[in-house]
Length: 77
Image (tube, rainbow, N blue to C red; front, top):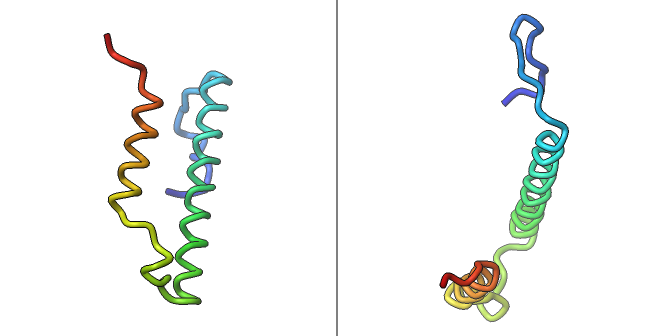
């Protein structure tokens, strides 16, 4: 994607202010997540992979994430 604005010969539909704000918030969160991933990758490139003892098994990460999703989901009658 380009950071250049669209040419003026293309008509663009303006968004409602709330929709534009929501898109900006999503973009900021996406940028934040990308920055976190980049920092981790840079650390690995600089220092190498962490030892196995310092890592969390993927099964534990999966169960933690599933539990968090279950708490966020409303109960179905």
